[in-house]
Length: 413
Image 1 (tube, rainbow, N blue to C red):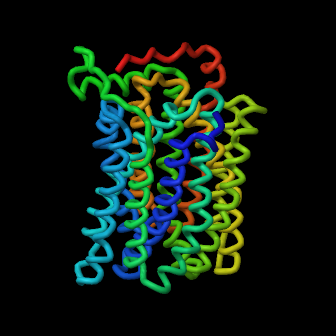
Image 2: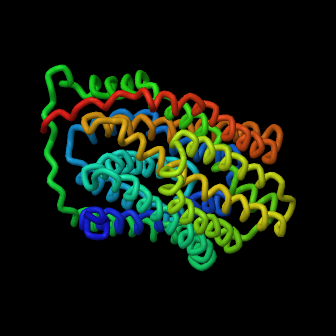
């Protein structure tokens, strides 16, 4: 069945599009709030990003066990409503004069918890909506959601921040999660709570099984190692991008929003190229090439010296990086879904989420220390080198894929 005639997938796609566009408001709005209203230092920004990953390290395996035990649609709805409620506290606190860095830390932690449970559940529910070759297409279409958000969201954020202030702009993100929850609520997909075998009576035993499966599966282990390494060094970039653009390059919010939106255009191209690349080249080669290209794009950022060169080089970096990033993500997620049986898919996805969202803030924290001691340019150059070197983990991947055994069978509900 064509994806355009799959009502459940279309409802998920609509909900994702709405929430992702809104999420771009908070992604830039919370750092803007910290920098412009609370005078946050690079160390504060690193700590803010670190807080966002604490929940992934602590709750990641639990999110996978929950997604494998329970129907995934209610998990996604609850996660959306949690994020809506938490983000609504930022404009309220600004209005009442309670806004502070500790409050932003709490908001980032709780919103990160909602995002963790949502992402694990949605990545695990997609294979039950589509089958066969449509899985790669579905992941590509969902990646287009991110691309559309990248085009619309940042430019919209820049204008909203200038017109309304950052805290009020974040209120729009809160409302977007409510709309996403409504769209997901309209999905009609039969789901049953899985029967739990005696040897999996505790959630802890399920969590350990998922971690062991990733550890013992040769191909998944390589994907996990690359994921963790790249995430650590992406944390450098995520921490310093806005601070470097604002304080070193003196780029205004509207111009920065346009620069980021340019990356969204190339991200849309990347989502379309991902399918063709997977059909033309071995998937391991696609993943390695996309990783190296993404890392090299980060090197353009510290080369900028002023607002004019900053707009040009940051824009070029967004164009290059945002083609390679979805090419990698779409093919990696599709490969992961195929290598993991339905019984373990939630826990495998949670393990990857834990690595990415847990190690990214660890990198952000280290980045804050390096940037304070040696400057932001040095830290950004290290980010580029680290992402490029993470491709080394993928060198033996293709040979492992050729030897991979089928995933474990699904346990009947």
